[in-house]
Length: 331
Image 1 (cartoon, rainbow, N blue to C red):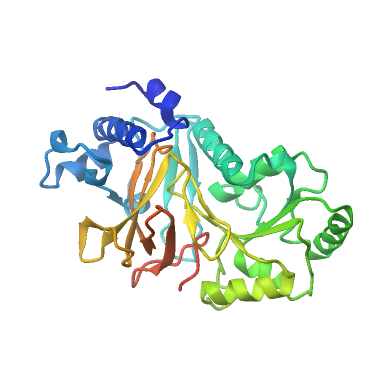
Image 2 (tube, rainbow, N blue to C red):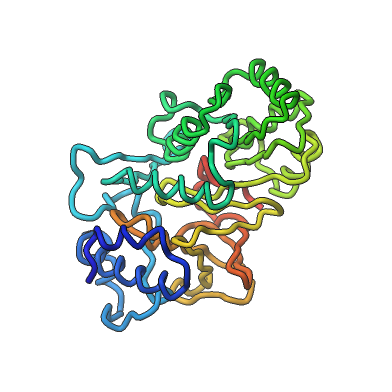
């Protein structure tokens, strides 16, 4: 078995499915040994861990465990960061304990560079609460860091300052500055209703979340509205969640692609231990190898379908599951 240090040395150098499989098996055995909650869950299943030879055989922990248990390898210490999900009043929120936040930072930086190149290429305008307003949000933590890395004087959080944002956008258009405009769904719609038009130098990325401020709507309807108002050819999306340390991105049509250290599988809705490979809708399971210190194998409440090239779409949510603040809208 590889040590944790040896696993981390290989994590962001994965290039092939075989390399992913080998590291996934190492992480599975590491987490089975060191994560008490995951060990108890796997041990309750009618399987022999010694028979597992492929990542599709590794049990995925239901995401609801993050609401009631401390899903963490070894122990929580003084430097442990706790990310929490957003939720409406009275909801039980998820807690994700991250013993080494530098792994998360490496994951989101390398993931962003893979899909969008260097953050310093952009001015980043975020329609998100800033870190002081939402200090438990992994999404806000990520974009707070990316804003710093952009090194652009106008990069920042603008959720509560639409007037200033509109003026900045006008200036950036005149300068032909490459710009990433991202935000929660309701805030992007608020901005769009101010009749702000963009240019080819702008990327618009929605991170989901009406947060009760507007009625939920179909993803296609949302993108149609935003494309028309902003006059851009496509709307990008980010797919991530509190319980993960990696993100998938969509550049158009709601089709997401994962970084090499992350995979999405689609399970049969009637059999959580059987996978669909024929573009049928099912439950989304995620393997996030960056999640080494908690659990890399997560059974989510999202519904989706996977394509032959391993890209995937998110169709909606299981009935009676929570609408998550940073997640995608119902479709």
